[in-house]
Length: 325
Image 1: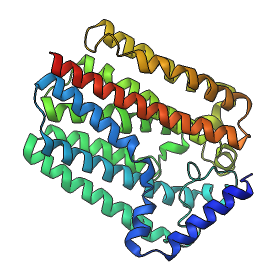
Image 2 (image 1 turned 60 degrees about the vertical axis):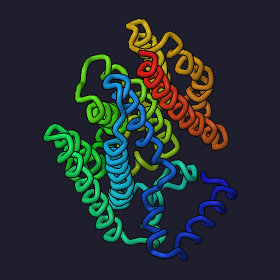
Image 3 (image 1 turned 30 degrees about the vertical axis):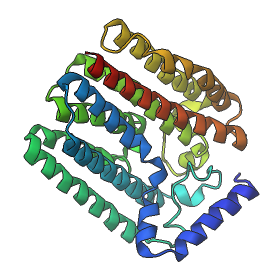
Image 4 (image 1 turned 135 degrees about the horizontal axis):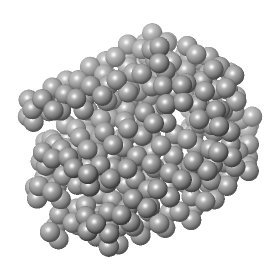
């Protein structure tokens, strides 16, 4: 159950948002605290593109970053709509504020479900407009990146598929916040996609998938009761902890591979290997203390920190390779 302190903090925030002007309510409905999950992959991919091309196009980077954030914001808003219609957020009294359980804007009447749905569509339109600008600058291939990103943003929560309820949500998030933005941003800068780039995208894909996976743990009972069958609902806490650990171990192993190939510098595996230490504690929390809210909060924050540190480190390694080369 949500603690009294958490309930007070959440209520204070929601009360403040309810009194805020419309623009501020719309901003916080997108859950901007989570935007690093989409911004950092664009940075890492752009750094890779620079290392290949030997130059950096700031306009392309800025447009790609803005388009990706708009897609991420649309996905967050539409996710609240989907979870409200599915009943998940309404029955969830175990969320860990502010990380899990949605924004609660619809349930508190801060914005209606129709308002959120329309706002999500506006954000998708903004992403499309930015995509058109990129298409005019770089050609038709960018269309496929944009279409796939938009499809994942919508189908994750809405439509007949509802990927987040069918056991495919974790894979969809990995693609949408790992492989897709990294390869797309790299292609914009360099005009090429190859096997080393795809491998380079996979550690970030693993780290962002781990964020979603651990965030689903506190919500597992509400999700299960409402038919939202995420992986923690389907496979249980033990297997979820194992999968969480494997995601991080694979990220470290792939970075070692990139270093052995000579694609990244010899020290590139240092941070991905170092973050395995706090990762094991987080995995143990999933396995043995999933109902300990204080420990779960630390585990979620650890996972967010691993993604941030790892993504920035890989971007720095790619830039170093470009400078040194």
